[in-house]
Image 1 (tube, rainbow, N blue to C red):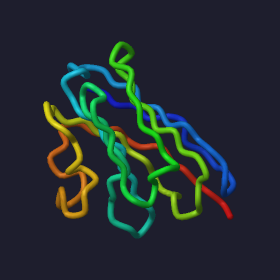
Image 2: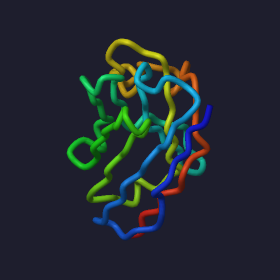
Image 3: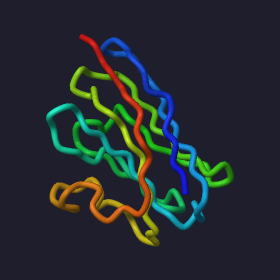
Amino acid sequence: VQLVESGGGSVQAGGSLRLACLTSGFSFDRYAVGWFRQAPGNEREAVSCISRGSHGAYYRDSVKGRFTISRDNAKNMVYLQMNNLKPEDTAVYYCAAEMNFGPCSDYVAVGGRDPPGFGMDYWGKGTLVTVSS
């Protein structure tokens, strides 16, 4: 099983990045996928998730309207388009997958998973996003 994130980098505030997560070794279309992030000295937090059939996409409040999650089951990939980036978005971003046949809204709900990401089956190694002011 592999999840490999890419697309991170350094941008100025207001800029955009598109993260990608290429997966292999499991039945991707049976899994919900989430994006998580962790800034230095901070706890991991859930950013967004998308259900296995793309029926539901969910976001933490601070990224709503700026980030968009999508997936391509034919390519076993999930994406996170990040627009209007802010310095507080600086973090290592991870994708993670969980076999889940329902909505994934609990991934991003406050208190939905404790700690955030608890129970996810597979994780990538992360990609660094740095946003300067």
